[in-house]
Every structure is written in C-alpha cells, then in structure tokens.
Image 1 (cartoon, helix red, strand yellow):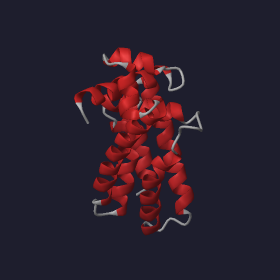
Image 2 (cartoon, rainbow, N blue to C red):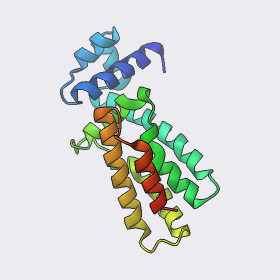
Image 3 (cartoon, one colour):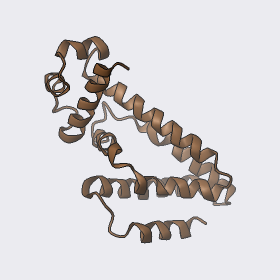
Length: 173
C-alpha cells in the first residue's frame, strides 16, 4: 500500500469510527487525508471499497491472533486466550473495533463471519474439555466478550477487569 493509500485508509478509519460509516462522505475523507477525492475512487472504487480494504486489514490482524491461539498447547489455554482478547485491545486498535461494533447495526456492511474463527476454536477446545453443549458455551463466552469489548470501547475501561477475568477463567477450567 502506498503512503497516500495508507493515509486515506487511516483517515477513513478514524472518521468512520467517530461519525459512522453512512455519515462520512468521501470528500471529508479526502480532506482529512490531504488527497483529492478522485484518488480515493482510483484506489478503492468507492466508499464501500474503502470500507472493504479496512475490514480486510482487520481480518488479517485477526488471522494472526487466531494462529497464535491455535499454537497454544492445551484447550484451556486456547479458551483463556480468547477470553482475554477484549481486555487487551491495544488503544491504537480502538478505531477499528469501534467501526466493527458500529457496523453491527448496519446489516448491509457488517460481516458476521469475523467472529467465526474464534467460535470454532472455542467449540473445539470446549469439546476437548468435555463440555456437553460446547456450541452454546462458545456462544455464551462470545456474548460475555462482546459486552466487555463494548464497555471498554465506550468507556475506556471495565470496572474490575481482573476480577471479571478471574471469574470467567474459573468457569472454564
């Protein structure tokens, strides 16, 4: 990706996360990035193409995390690693995750397949751990994590993160 393309992506991500995808015109992205609006269309075809580029970059980062989690030796370690994800979101990644969470309410743009690799890992690990209804347990864990991530992204913190993590870890030992 060229420096100008990266500038466009960075500006779009920041603006989409702050104002919402539908509320941001390409002209605002171009102005923020210091490029012509035509350059956005040249590189990304349209605003949806730009969103897709941002989401693809996020998916690649998620794939890296999935690889690290799969490399863990025990099912308990894999479950714990997934449970810890929202508590260790790097602040520099907040705009991406704010965008993802805002897109959940915009069915035309939200990709619900993003959480599938984590769910698959959880189900597999929970089956190894002899949970009877591993799929429901995986859904429960992901729902907890969704709530934690939402709180962290909105407020910047969770009241007692260590206590919450400890409680979750106890449930899935």
